[in-house]
Length: 84
Image 1 (cartoon, one colour):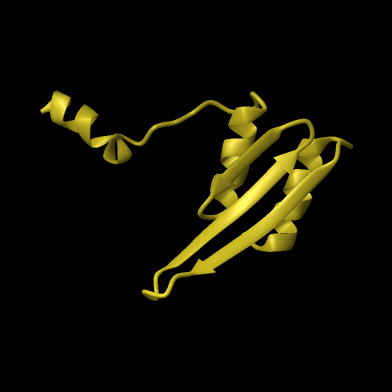
Image 2 (image 1 turned 180 degrees about the vertical axis):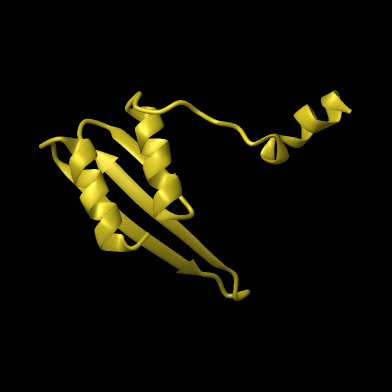
């Protein structure tokens, strides 16, 4: 998903409210690069993801438009250990 598509999706979710979209790229002296896709809808509803799709899915959850789905392969390590 590109920036403009994410912007259009955020605008729909904002439903006329103030909203903001940002792409942050940080490059550390070690060469490591960190990327954050940041979304905000007034008042105080925000989400951050590594991709626009991830950030939009989190925003939908924050707005109550989607349910949190957990991939068992991505469960926290403690949970995996309990299952075994």
